[in-house]
Each structure stands twice: as C-alpha cells, then as structure tokens.
Amino acid sequence: MNAERFLKQLPALFEDFPVSEHPDDRRFAPIAEEIENLARENNFALLNLAASCLDPGEAYVEVGVFHGASLIAAMLGNQSNRFVGIDSFDFRDASLETVEQNLDRFGLSRPELLVGDVFELAREGKLDDVVVGAWYYDALHAYEAQLEGLRIAEPFLAPGALLIVDDTDWEQVGRAMDAYLAGQPRARRILTIEGKERGYPQWWEGMQVLEWRP
Ligand SMILES: C[S@@+](CC[C@H](N)C(=O)[O-])C[C@H]1O[C@@H](n2cnc3c(N)ncnc32)[C@H](O)[C@@H]1O
Image (tube, rainbow, N blue to C red; front, side, top):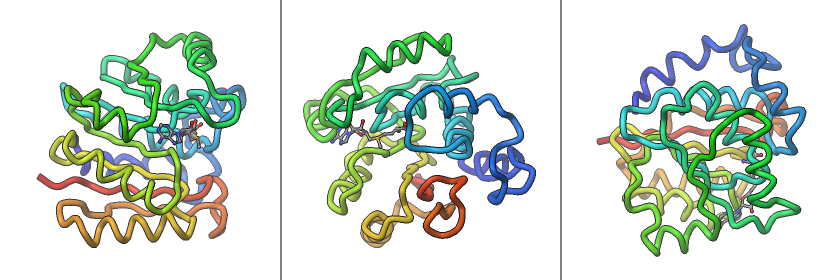
C-alpha cells in the first residue's frame, strides 16, 4: 500500500478539502442516493482512493457492508483489485441478497463476501490467505469491539496498510483509537477528519486513517 500517495492525492479530489460538500467527481452521488447507507459522498471518495492505492496482490477488506454502498464505492474503477466484504447481516434489514442486487445495479461483479461475525471468521482462518492493503472497519463501534476490530486485522496487514475507521467523532471510538495507538507502536495516525458533531456533516461522523508500519 502506498500510504504516501493516498495522503497526497486525497486533497486533490476536492475543491477545498476537507470543507467541500462533495468530491469534484460526482460518481458516488448515485450510490449515496440510491442505496441505504451510513456515510456521505466524501467518505466514499476516501475509500475509493484507498482501494486505488493497493499494491498488486493486496486486498481492500471492509468489515460492515450493510447494503453495500461503501463497498461499491470502493470498487468503482478499481475492479482489478481484490475486495473482501464481511458482514453478519444482523443490523436492520441488511442481507446478502440486497448487497448482490446493489452490486448488479452498479454493474459490478461479486467481490468475496464473507457472512458471519468478523471475530469468529478471523479465528476460523477465513482471512488467512488475504494480504490486507486497506482495512475499513465500519461494524460495531462499542469501545472493546472497535479496539478488537483493529487488533484482529494485524496478522493480515501488508507493510504500509491503511486502517480506516469511521464514526471517530464518537467518544468511545476516539478513545479506542487512542488506546490502540498507545499499545501498538507499529501503527501511526496519518489522518483525522472531523464529522458532523464537530461541524463537518459532509464527512458523516468523522474518519481516521492509521498506517501500519513495516
Ligand atoms: C454501520 S453498518 C455499515 C455501513 C456501511 N459501511 C455503509 O457505509 O453503508 C454496520 C454493519 O456492520 C455489521 N456488523 C456489526 N458487527 C459485526 C461483526 N462483529 N461482524 C460482522 N459484521 C458486523 C452489521 O451487520 C452492519 O451491517
């Protein structure tokens, strides 16, 4: 993963980063409008850029697919890369069938979709063949789950991998990010973007990006 390229290119996607209401390129607008989601166009642009910065053989892994909006946004234009989506589908009316229909609607072929609890799937070895270049954790954001949602990724991370988390405005998420960094010298925070609690609703509830250092 080329974290430096990611950081350099992100502001260039916006007229006035991070203030802009949307990225210059509006291709994520239909996703935001047509698929129920918990994000904004800006978050989608960031994920798409991360997926475009993967090195050969690396995968974008998303924990918390819901109806597929963020995964579809990450995949647009990056389909030669490997994508793995993980969801237990026990939130609202989320289902694998809906994700598949939404992938069809946006003309995308099926990525690898693992159905179940991410912590169990990882323990069972379902991620053992995945070299993670970008790990997007958007599942349960309770303090312990958030912390563990970063820790379980560690055995699979490529040098320079990005750990991307949203809803980082939330007190317990911010605290979990700080605790994770305090206990893991191989990770460093390379980006914090504030969200609606802090005056930037165009970034949903905020995002942070960590880099996994070789
Ligand atoms: C906030 S939604 C994801 C939103 C999606 N990324 C988007 O932008 O539209 C959180 C999802 O995480 C899933 N989830 C929560 N805990 C999980 C776990 N332990 N393992 C797998 N999926 C989980 C839920 O089923 C839910 O669909």
